[in-house]
Structure formats: structure tokens, C-alpha cells
Length: 490
Image 1 (cartoon, rainbow, N blue to C red):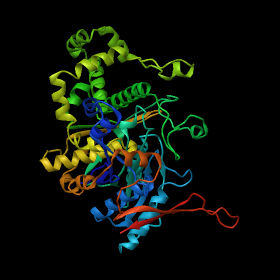
Image 2 (image 1 turned 180 degrees about the vertical axis):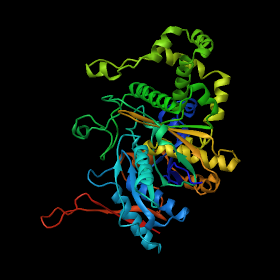
Image 3 (image 1 turned 180 degrees about the horizontal axis):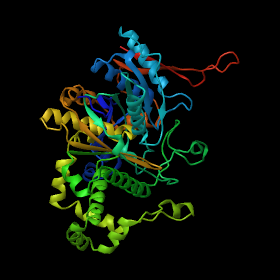
């Protein structure tokens, strides 16, 4: 019996070959490896000088097509979710152009001429917005045609900044259709939340013309303007509102849902952030359920905060932006809840809950770094691949994907593995995509990061896209100044 829910039939991953080992990075910078490994992860990827967000996206899309024997002529939608695009006019059509030429070179048909090619931008949530649009396409006017969504980003920060260890780069592609072979997506019961947060993790164009911006970087840098604590508050506030909206639409309590859900996948800028979000959500669930108040009172006592303060914070709807708008410093409206969540994370019972609900793929993605819009689908892909390898039963069980984009907005989307999902999961190819990494020395990393020639780094692109040249013409009759030309290196 066909499902009335459209969904995802296949996934693929591409990450650059160049890797920075975070233990080595700690030696270079004097940071604590014990802290970095617990909070962030083990390594991150850095794009080479031959690639950018479009080449990474095209690599993931071509892998998706070839690994799953997709008929390119059936594809009617190609959506790109990114915050790292370098062209302010075109988007997914650039990816389409590369894939077309590679397919032709491989003796395969090009993508359909009748193909929608939108780009979606909202910080790290662009890929989820692209996915929702593709699902609606499949369910409404796509008929028997297919849709591809690719999330691709370069997460980069100035060297020496507090975000440097959370860098990364990569792309994840998803095949969407009306009768999915991997998992269904229940948009009708998904949760949505958004609120404007002003300077929360922004990339204003004016920063490139402001003295003092990225003074040590000798190239055009896409570093964000961010404030760590304010961004963390915004993440927690928006994700809980999206999840709680989803729970209301599902008609279930937080406690029963967290007990029954088989897997929780969050946007993951670094390893600890989803754990903080889940502990925050759990405390709010205790506050909303009267029969859990004894447990909450005990936790409040351990945290040294008022039980009534937690209840008040749970019922509140704070305006995080108000003080910032008026020129003041950001203030945390959830001081008591945050304190209780910190105590909760140390409890063995909660750690056991996390092990049951958030462990799939969690260790694997410690080697990715932050992929911005691709971070959530990458974790989901890693989790499904691990589940099939370990024989974990997921068919029909509830899963949830929680996306977030600074600025800010969040989505909480119920998904469920379909019968026979194991076959599709075996084609994800997550582990092979991470293989054959090239570990960078300190000098190579710093040169690559800052835009200098990299000495001693031998790498020849193979079976991937690369920037062949950049246009220089600026004549009346023809102009291509700054336009990148690509080729597929076989």
C-alpha cells in the first residue's frame, strides 16, 4: 500500500579530502584537547583551492545519482540549501551545469531540461527549507518525477577566534519522491518556529569594507559576525519552540515522546550542542507535566535554583532581541532552566537516555566538523548507515530531525524508516566518503586557510569537480569577470 507521505529514498555525502586533526590543532594553538574533544569533536575538513560550495554540491549530487542508479531524465527539482554561495544571482543551476557535463562524459543522459533549480538561504536551515519544498513538489505537482535536495556549506572562522575549532566543509544530497525507499517525512505534524534575533550569527556584506575585519586573512573571507553566548541562547530558545510545536501537533506529551522515539537528530554545529538542547527540552518537559514535578524539584535542589523560577521560565515567551535592539547586552531568560539542564546532563539515567536516543551516527560525525546546512542531514545519514550495519530495527519507529538556522528559525520534523529501508541505507556510502583523508600540517592548514600557496601538499582531483578557471573579461561585447568555469576530473 503506497504511503500518503512523500519522503527520502537515498542519501550521499561529499567532504573535501583535507583534514585538520583537532588534537594536533590543540598542540598548535595551546587549547585543551580534553575540552575540545568533549565539546567539539575530533577533526574538521577544509576545502582545497580547487573547490567551493558548488563543486562540493555537484560531487554529492553526482554520487547520489550514480550510487542509486537514478534516471537523470526523471528529476524535476534540484534545490540547493546553502549560506556559502558566492554568486548573488544564480544558485542550483550552477550545480546542474556541472552535473550535466559529467553525466554526458560518463555516457549518461543529462538532467531533464524541465527542471526547477531554486536556491534556499537561511543560515544552517536552508537545506531543511529546500527539503520541505522538494517534498511539497513530490506530493503536489511532481507526479512520478523525482526531486534532489543538496545541502552544501563551508564553515570557516578567523584563525584565533572562538569558532575556529568548529570549522568544516561538505555536502549532503537527498533523493525525494512520492513513494520513498528510506524514510517518510510527516510535514503535516512538523513544528516550526522563528523570531528575528538581529546580530545573531550574521554575514553582512558591509563587513568586507570595514577596517579591522579579518586583518590576518589575505583573501575574501566568508567569516561570520557572531557572539557565542547569544547564539547559544537563540539556538536553545528556537529549537525548543519548534519541538514543542511538533509535540502539540502530534498530540503527545514530551515524556512519552522522548521515551518512544527511536532516534533524535539535531542541527549539530559541534558535538555538545545537541546534548545541551536535549537536556533543555527534557527539563521543560518535566515542568509541563505535573506528575514529573517531584523529579524536577529534586533537580532544582541540586542546581540551587528555584522550582518556581523554572516553571515561570517554561511558561514565558522572552524577546531575546529586545535588549540588543536597545543597545544593551544580551541577557539569558532561562538562567534557572539552564542550571537544571546542566545538572541533568551529569545524571546516569539521562546519559543512558542519550545513549539510546542520540548515539546513532554521533561518534562518526565527530570527524566532520560543522557543515552548516549539511550538518543535520550528515548526522542523519551517518545514523542510518550505522543502524543498518549494526542491524538496528527502525522500520516504522518514530525518528525526528530538528533543524536550526541562526537569525533565527527552527524546524522539528517527524520521520520514520519505511519497510526495506536497509537496502537504501547500504548505498549511502558515508564511510567511503570519509576515507583517504589528507592530514594537514600546521603550516599547510594556515596557508590554505589564509589563501596562500600551500607547499608540500600533493593532491590530484579524481572523479570530482574542480574550478578550471575564473573569467577575466570585462568588455562591452562580452563579460565574464569573476565567473567560475568548472570541469569534471575523471
